[in-house]
Length: 141
Length: 457
Image (cartoon, rainbow over all chains, first blue to last red; front, side, top):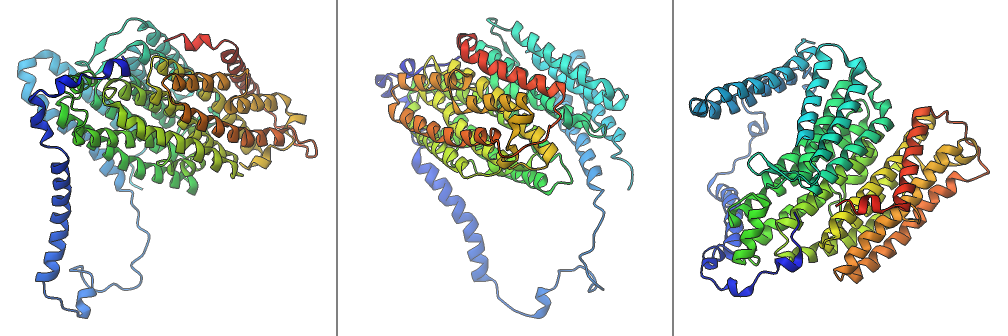
């Protein structure tokens, strides 16, 4: 499994072969260019909008955008976030779909084994769903 | 390979046990399942084969570390039975542990960078959930949050590194990567260097080596003690084994620059881990820093990169895993009875609990590296492997570091034998006594007969 140092000192004479040149061109220069471009792209947007936009300050601007009438009392009340469990369960079906699409493309070529394999996969996913149900994840609290 | 299938089936059976209500008898099933996985793994010995389109190879390196990981997990189950007492959550914990074992086994037997990524993720995601398994404890929640955020962030580093390496070599396969690098001599390509260093960053984070160690003390202290023991033994073993496997095969060609980087990382980790551990008064936090410093010693085997590296690393992880499990067991018993995790909580343990106190002493002496215990020979083999490759300076730093280590490990022993304070009888049950006895005997056995493991690979 392990290659040791002695074996791995590669021969420098091979280094001169022309095929190495092609990839060497995407060396440090292009890395730095990529990073600079990335920084310039994100910073440029912010700076440009600073320059181009007109700045106005009125009290309306500090309000929450398009969120109905001003609140009565404190808006920091405790909410039940139980709904996240449903979102998590939805993930099971999400993952299922992600795998079913590529499966649907090749199922005709592969034939019966593909059907059996996907049934095993669905069974395991269904097991996870059943487990969550047993744990009471679908009960409304 | 069969061991992976057995573990996956075991995980599904645990889920079944929740659905069909046989979770009362799940403990023996899990125990038998893991023993079956060990037997199946041993069946692959000297019988190297590739699976999943060359993504996993069960060579002797993979088999030996798989068996070690599974064996330590068996011991861990004995130690952490208190964690599985709650009927509500026991199937969750059991399945998470078994699924994380699948990740660990994939990590030590991969031959494909994607498989490495997958293994690390399977292991890590289970650990994020387990670190926060004390839901009503703020420290546990904080530990899970910190571990998850930083772990997810470094996963990005790993993926970016893999992408850059793929961009240069055109392959995810470790053999093909090393072949390509050696045949074309692209070792000086900056993109490749950037990729290797990004992967190195991610992996040193996973084994908690300085300067990527900041998460470790908080996470180790906040997580429930059994989970901390699992992280510091099984997870660390899997991470360092995958480290050596990757850097010893795929990146062994352009080794000059990353060995220089690792040299510095190893030296800083040993010095920082040992010195910071001296200042801790909390035993759990001190063990966390000690585990950081042990990561530094383990990295030395990757730096040595010769034919002794794999066997010395296997011995080190075995010795360290067993000793740290025993140390965490003592901490678990003391903290559950007296409610404190401070080192002063151990005072006067010897008078009323002689068996536990002696086991604690053996574990701590083994961690410190005192002959004739396993920890001494573990350090000896790692140092001699590094000396063979000519890293005398690093070995000198490591020896100095372990001298500092002796200081804080002996503080535990001094507390245990303090005669002014009387500790109550802790009422340790038979299982825990047997566990401590097994760990002590193994530490002695590996110390007296190191050839049992060192000649294995």
